[in-house]
Image (cartoon, rainbow over all chains, first blue to last red; front, top):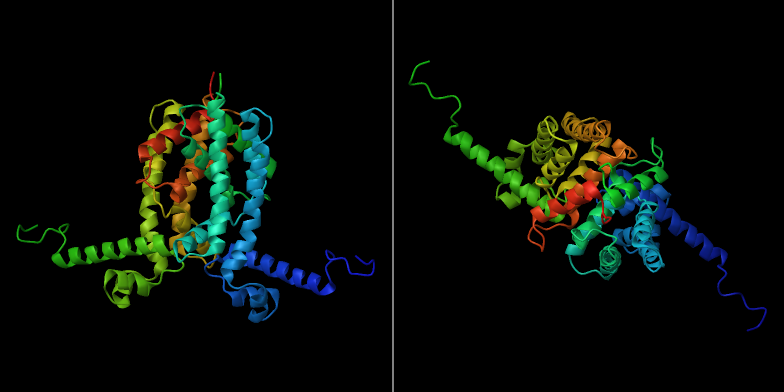
Length: 209
Length: 209
């Protein structure tokens, strides 16, 4: 390779401007999804929020589903990778459970529920490889949670009377619910929230004598 | 009162037909909200599903919000009354907590999340007395849950290290989440689900020695 050739990994000014525009579109779309809802937000409104024509949005994204997926897929993948890594650690299951709840809570996304509902509904329609890919990541993540509960039961750390699937889903439901009621600017910090949920998941609400 | 006068409380055939039509509209609207989403369902589609003209739907309901409220408000009120009654019982808080979780789970509505999200978004728009009324019921219900947790802490039954508000909301989040993942026709019955959630809420996931 000659020293004069442009390094391949360095982005040209053009690429960098394009990447900024893409990011702007994703950010404004995310805000509109939050305030007006995914269903009620049109490509026109996203374009107006960015200050461009709708054609400019279509230059980067095929449709609204692609924007939605581009927001939620990287989050979902990093959630799953985080759980995969901590599940492999040589730790008591109790500690893994704490880390797993924290891994989930610290990736807090207030739009979570609506995006899930939207993606699930879209998933019921005609087959779409992008939605199928996202649903696969979610299924892998849920399966990893169920495996963690099962591992804990096999080692005697987690109560055998609990159904692994219901337990995994119930913990996830509990950890997802702050998307509806929690505001990090409110009386409780995210750390406070995580600490409380960890305690509730491990020991339940009853006082221990 | 003369014996010949028509009893006031007995509905005329006309009233009874009207009440059937209303019920039909509510049922079909609920089905469409479930399969297509609240936002994507129009009054026209509801009318078509019932087999009437859109004017017939407007004869009974001002708009889609009124249909939505008419589905969700009675459910919400009965949820709240159920909790109010059991909270007044002379029972240990542990037992009240079991009954409170069951009260919530047995009123399972798979449309719950989307309706909540829709109502919350509508609530952020211009003031609407119907939505405000529904939000009031939800707030009263949540306040009752927080009061139950506080009562348990005061009596030494519930762990003092838990924040009452986070705990109440987290338990509700856990009990609401089956709306997304639970199907009563699946491998687990509703009783099975309720039993597992009760155990998790009271004692957490860890095995007790």
